[in-house]
Structures are given as C-alpha cells and as structure tokens.
Amino acid sequence: MKDFDGKVAFITGGASGAGLGQAKVFSEAGCKVVIADIRQDHLDEAVQYFRSKQAVVHAIKLDITDRKAYGAAADEVERVFGSPPQLLINTAGVNVLGPAEASTFEDFDWVMGVCLGGVINGLVTFVPRMIKAGQGGHIVATSSWGGFMGGATTAPYSAAKAAVNNLMESYYLALKPYGIGVSCLCPVGIRSNIFEATLTRPQHLQNTGYNVNQKTIEFERKFYAQGIDPVELAHLLKKGIENDVLYILPFPDPEQALKDNFAHILNYATPEGMKRQAEIEKKRSAEMGKKPNPMMDGAEEAGWGKAKQEISWVAEEHRVQK
Ligand SMILES: NC(=O)c1ccc[n+]([C@@H]2O[C@H](COP(=O)([O-])OP(=O)(O)OC[C@H]3O[C@@H](n4cnc5c(N)ncnc54)[C@H](O)[C@@H]3O)[C@@H](O)[C@H]2O)c1
Image (tube, rainbow, N blue to C red; front, side):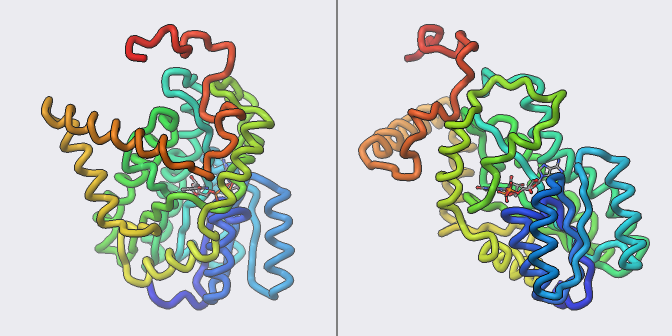
C-alpha cells in the first residue's frame, strides 16, 4: 500500500503509545482513523487531540478479547465510513513480567488473550470483510523483538508474540492473491504507557504469580521512557507498509541481531551447541555484570521481574544449580 489518502485505518490500542503514534502518522497521511481501545480516558484524550487537528477520527471503546464486541465494532466502522478498513493495525497489547515458573493460568490467559487472542480476533473479524470489499489493503500486527526468543521472565508475552510473528507470516502468504499486504512490526522498546497495563487487567484474571506493585510500575515508567518515540516508530512502519515488507525491524543492525538469534536456536539443537551457547551466555552475563546498565537502575530494589513474595518455591534454596 502506497497511497493512504482517504483510506480507513482501524487501529487497536490506537489511543496510547505505539498505536497513538500510528494514528497520528496515518491520519497525517490522509487516513480516516478509527481508534479502538479499552481505556475510555485514553480515547477521550486522543479524540481531543485529533479534533484539534481537524482530522477525521472515530473512537470505539473495545476490549479486543471480546469477539462479539469486535464484530459490533466492525459493523460500526462500516456504518460510519461506508466500508471496512483498508488498513488494519493490531497494536493493542499488555505485558507483565515474572519468572516463568511462577506464572498462573491467569497470567497466561490475560497476556496471551490480549496479545495473541486480540490479533486473532482482529484477523477473523476483518479479513473476510476486507476480501469481500475487494479494495485490497494492508494488515499489521505490532509484535515485538521478544517474539524471536524465549525469556526467563517473559513467558506469556514471548509466547504470544512468537505466535503473532508466525501468524502474520501465514496471513502474508494467504492474503497475497487478494491484494492485501501483511506486516509484522517487531520493536525493542517503545516510549509508551505499557507500565500501566495492569490497570486494564480484568477482574477474573487478577490472580498473578508475579511481583506487581506501585514500585514495579514506577520502575517500568522510567524503563519504557527510554524506548523509541511512537511517532518515529510509526514512520518506520509506514515505510515498511509502502515497501510491502513482512517483517519490520526497527532497531540497529537487524541482520546481525537476527543472525545471532537464529544461531542460538542452532546451538540449542546439539550437545556441542548447548555447551557453546552456555559459554556465550556466561560471557554475556559477565560482560553485562561489568558494564553499568542505566536502563536497569532501580530494577532490583523494585523487585521487577520477580515472583510475588508468597511464592516461596521460586527462592534460591530450591535451585539445583545456584
Ligand atoms: N512498550 C514497549 O517497549 C514495547 C516493545 C515491543 C512491543 N510492544 C508492543 O506494542 C504494542 C503497543 O503497546 P504500547 O507499548 O504502546 O503500550 P500502551 O499501553 O501505551 O498502549 C497499548 C494500548 O492498548 C490498550 N489495550 C490494552 N488491552 C486492551 C484490550 N484488551 N482491548 C483493547 N485495547 C487494549 C491500552 O488501553 C493502551 O491504550 C503492544 O502490542 C506491545 O506488546 C511494546
């Protein structure tokens, strides 16, 4: 997709962070923008911004995990703009960190429900409508660099994002004949409000195994403030859509980063490789130990990425390798 003028862009999570950056950039490019978000306060603020720019914007309060509501939102878009979106951007997401072994079902259901289930709901709701409309278009998922690897404290998030990467590749291949492009945006860090994600965690999924409290939220506020500016990221996304590339990798030297990443998978595939990988990791953590990492200042004191205190079996004394 190269011409955005007059196109309808439906952006989940469009009222904050990466999604708001995308709404701004595609609105400036001439799109009629629908921002769909679970947070009414974020929607109100965003609508005020777009109205002040005389931009065409429509806000829908939507929980992307609610399939019925998603269908109703799609009907609303057609009622308001006369067609389904030509540009569908699945950006809404949440995150919470803690040791994989402390994860509860609710940690998985919440994070995977939004980050993976929400994207699935977007695809299943809109793809048939986009095909029937016969106008072509482009579909994006905002995934993460985290989807290319596992992490000891990122299990639900990494699993969801890995699945999203894979899913988008399937849809890329499937939707080509319909003139619908597909891209998967894989950022590292974004200056956003994701540190507040826990505020939208539903009541029935509150049970977490992780240490989440005001201190960890405060730490995250500073941590994410060091990420890429959402508008800058959205410009990189726009360029990726214009060039019709599947993976958009907005970080330095993506080729080397991905080569290193896939090398670790090959290493994990043989006993000799496992030793090689263990050496690499040992060296890496020794180097990290030597260098101060200002991004992580305060993480330890806040207990970020730790299990909640009641979970005693995550403690040191239960570890075989200390
Ligand atoms: N912040 C980062 O460092 C980072 C890095 C890589 C990828 N990402 C991804 O970027 C995307 C956007 O996140 P962000 O960092 O801009 O965070 P953000 O919190 O600023 O924006 C996310 C928006 O999604 C909304 N949302 C959450 N749950 C929802 C639901 N169930 N239904 C509808 N809307 C919902 C939130 O209300 C919020 O407005 C996410 O998919 C995230 O995983 C973020």
